[in-house]
Amino acid sequence: MPNTDFKRLIRPHLLQLEHFSPADPPEEQARRAGIPEEEIIRLNANENPYGPSPKVSDAVAQVDYSIYPDPEQRRVREAISDFTSIPIERLIVGAGSDEIIDLVFRLVMELGDQIVDSDPTFGMYRFDAAVNGVETVLVQRDDAFELDVKAITSAIDKRTKVIFICSPNNPTGNVASHEQIKALLDTGLLVVVDEAYWEFSQQTVAPMVYDHDNLIVLRTLSKWGGIAGLRAGFGIMNPELINRLFGMKQPYNITTATEAAVIASFEDADYLNCNARKIVSERERMIALLSDIEGLEPLPSGGNYVLCKLATGRAKPVFHDLATRGIFLRNFSSPRLKDCFRISVGRPNETDIVITALKELV
Ligand SMILES: Cc1ncc(COP(=O)(O)O)c(C=O)c1O
Image (cartoon, rainbow, N blue to C red; front, side, top):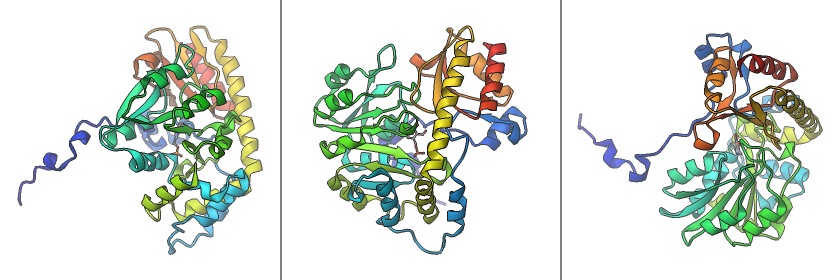
């Protein structure tokens, strides 16, 4: 057999790629904790504790898997359009909003280009930047983790093409204002506003797409819709960009099961909105309970999660002690968040178990 030097074949900028750290599946968490899977408290991935609409499984059961999905995504875009009032020519659906982020990178970025990202935030923007050989200029959010618009605009240079804003921001919960987004749009660069959690804040900049061709808004069915496993997200932007993305995406990028699930979800939006309201009120209850724990400070949040700050050096041991009890939260290694963890909002009984454990451990 010839001896191939694979390293020589790999694109040089990918040789140093730092891996994204995604959430492990529950069976792996259970194995690690040595606890049966049904006893795991999984509050590390911002999933929906109430799951999908019951209509999703019925709809998916009717799908004929032998037929390819519609490459133009007509029915599913119509369903989204009916619900959001966004015209179909401004919509594209992806295998999760992650796929749309990836497509945007591949549409506009060349090796050596730059994005501006506001730290701390969702890691996917800088990960995709690295995959595409694009440099990420990290601007720090302020002490309350609010956007620093002045610092973002000062960080722009001739290589900058896209500004990424996550709102509500994962993991800090901050919601960007219309004024902040407007100021960024005035730079003329592409501004991607990731609204994966907007249903838990009810604040959106989506209507601004009509007046701003450089705005891309991202949404997902993974949080509000509870179908993270089926992979469905969508992008809202000007029709020219939509056409370009359709021209370059994989023709069958979402499955027929995903199409059916998205349509059924929007048909049952009242049910999902009701669950979103339950999650918001549970978030506020959890914040109140967390505030009573000495040595722990929960931050306000517009998402389905709460970031908690602990005393220096305490987050790591508490996080690990919780994991040995089968309670999984999200921790961070970055300098600004090393003393924090994020708790996804679960069902009330899960909140109670976490609060009891935190009272003992913090
Ligand atoms: C801010 C943000 N955007 C996008 C995603 C990914 O969403 P999807 O499951 O639609 O790819 C996540 C997932 O956690 C997220 O937190």
